[in-house]
Length: 351
Image (tube, rainbow, N blue to C red; front, side):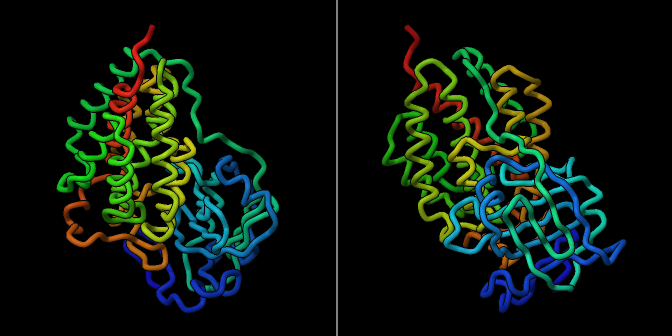
């Protein structure tokens, strides 16, 4: 095992865990008690199928004091990566929230064990989580006026600019190409640009993936809420199908799962708050500030550390220092801005 600076531990050798699911995997050692700890959790509806299905072996691909990442073996369908996270931390759309005491009692260690998912429970080493409640990762935004969305998109763009956190792929042409093609309704061009962005960048969730996620969520959830927004939803359908078709071979395992979630309109808690802010349901300024500061759980390579087992992406020609100062939340926010502008451009004028 190798201990990373932030407390994240991943297997050094891919021998047993990556080849034999359900046998020997990275586990969690008891920090306070050698006995198994049973806790209850609230799970996202995005991961209801694997959680309520038959019990299947999984592997722990990363573990830290605030989250444990588990992956189901192929040919399991997406979402294949599930996150057990402490309540109060960033809540991804594929996560199960448990009381902080559940993870505080355990620290990453060298003791191996089995991981299992199914029948309403998750078992990782000595930690067993029983899911008793569910939460919906798809915010309901309701009917939305064009003027409200225009105002929100302008405010979010201003917040992104004033924060000093630009997109991590600012030196690449594809984000601008994708934005222009989406606004013009150029499906072929948008698909080509989006496919080139999948897996582009550094981190557990590359910057290209995060920007696409924000774009898809805005097109589907905000575009679908304004008058004449059917073209935006249509575009989200085709783009989502294109970027998820072979995502498991083009990006990290966590990145592929989050692309799947975004294609289905499922967002993290921070992104959902911004979406509600854009719809005028809560403070956009506060939600945008929180999202732009989000880095650790959403995939910043330096914040979480890098792992060959987790499938950390590092695109050739993109330096570590060029991304170290950027938060993945910024890429999501810029993707939301792009999606809002495209949805407005594609919307039919009201009668």
